[in-house]
Image (cartoon, rainbow, N blue to C red):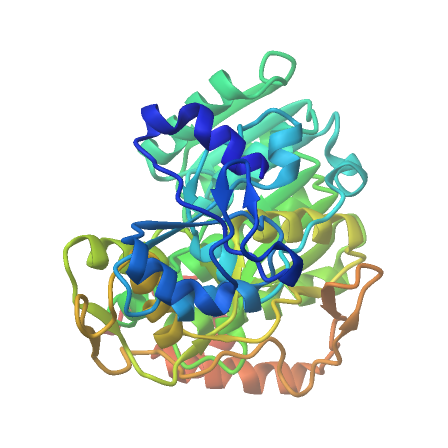
Length: 461
């Protein structure tokens, strides 16, 4: 009723004509409310759409669970109708948006679980008044880290990335959109983490108390054909930063890893697993800095995300390309991912790996069909879905922990923790040899991560 009242006010400018309500309440059937008829229940929706020539269905249920959205999507499948939603009540009450604001149903609404929300004020207290360094600051995760960290008032925020455009844009955004910008010092730096000397200059000048290490090459198939660079950037660059953090008085260090590091089938996953091992070893030997890691699933809306690819393919008229009909992935939103990283920094005591409870993995093929339907189109008719086969390095299903990691819930019911496994040197070296085989380095990897200079790497290839 609130939405209808607002839309009536703005209907002409929005070019909308309201035709009626759908409601499952039996007492409301055939009633006239605000001059509009209740046309039936959800089960009647397909017939109502056909009979009345409906173009859009507006879901005025901002807190509806995935199952309800999925049911409505299913009812509208085969109909040439777009589905839109209204903003959440919190957004309305705080004045961020008005009820006249409609939005397309975002794929974030289809996580099949409630989004995880953490109390940022309590968990981020350790960042207030501190000097914080973020690597990969121009990327999807790094830039959101910068936004959320800036919101709690650090003394200094050091932005590091080798992508000058990414650094430029996040620095500009913070300058114009963050209320704390004038009170804190923001230092945008174009640096390559592969250069130990360059990183050393940064830490020597700014002496950060907290480091969030998000910089990495992440695209699985691409890294299969660029293994040397994956090793140089993801392993050597991370090792540079981990070592220098201990040397220059960093108090907390959070490494952004991936679920692809668990029993890795890809070069990217293998490089991340190597860094996890190295970080846990460093955590055992360093008493001055708390090192911990965070594993992500797929991040919705990040650069290179399958969601963005599907949107582009649908906008072009298809086909939507899916690698395999049975492929499943864990998904999380960018704000969820960043809250997890910041929470890990608060919870970490040394050597832990944190993972968000991301619910059940989602079939990529089902996600593709949902996105086509939400666009008001018919899968396999208006938009074809093509299965193109697994790409190099990909698995059908991802895992969150290995068999030997004894994971448990933390004090936060939606965050899992795997304490440092404290495996022996022989077992560590055996795993490194296996990872080395995956990376084309064999036994050399054992000595490579123990060598500060990491000479040669692929000099024989």
